[in-house]
Image 1 (tube, one colour):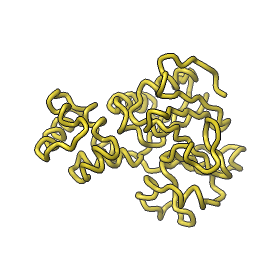
Image 2: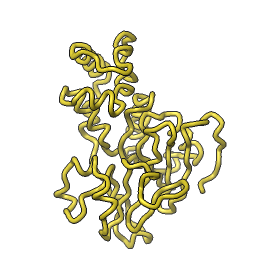
Image 3: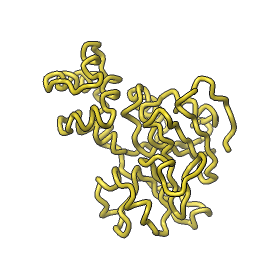
Image 4: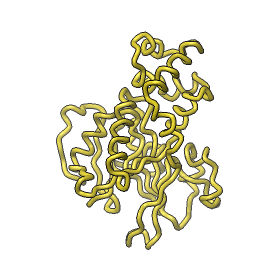
Length: 262
C-alpha cells in the first residue's frame, strides 16, 4: 500500500500515465493518489486527464482524492459565463481545455490562439455542458484542501494538502478561497507554522533555494509542482511519506526510461 501525491498535471495525460506506470500504481493493491489541483489547462488532453482521474475516483472513492486548483476554478467560471475570456482562454491556457472537450470541429478551430465572439463561446459552452453533464457539478464539488493521515514523520499531526498555500497566521477555517487557490510568496516566504503543508501551484524551480529535481522541502513546507504548465517542465509524482519521486519531463517523453523511485 503506497500513497502518491501529484499536482499541476495541466492536461498532460501521457506524462501522468507514464509517471503512474513507473511506480506500478495500483489501487487494486490499496495504493492511494492525491491530486492537488490544476488537472486542466495549457496541455492538450485536459478532458482525458479529468475523465481518467474521475474514473479512478468512481471506482476507488476511498483511495483517490481530487482537489480544486485555480485552473479548475477558472474553467468552472468560464463554463458559467463568469470569467474574463481573454484572461482564461489566452493568458491561462483555457483554450486548450475548451478544445479538448468540444465535439464540433468548427468550434474547436475557433479556440485556436484567439478569443472567439461571445456567440461562439456560448455555443461552445452549450456543446460542452450538453455532452458532459457531470462536468460542472464535478468542478463545483472539488474540495479546496484535504488532510493526509498523520504519521511519525509529521509528529502525529496530519499534513495539509492545498493547491497554492495558506495565508500565514489565519486559521484554516477562515482562509479565503482566493488564497488557497492563488497565493505564492506571502505563503512560502513567510510560513512558519507547525503544521506541514504540501502544495502545488508554484513550480519547484521557482521556489527559494531549489536545486536539482524532486520536491521542494523547506521546514514544514513541501512543494510538488513539476512545472507541467511549461514545455520545459514535467510531472512530479511523490511518494508519501518517503518523498521518493519520479519525474517525467514533457520533452522526450516517448524515450523516457522506466526507473525506480529515487
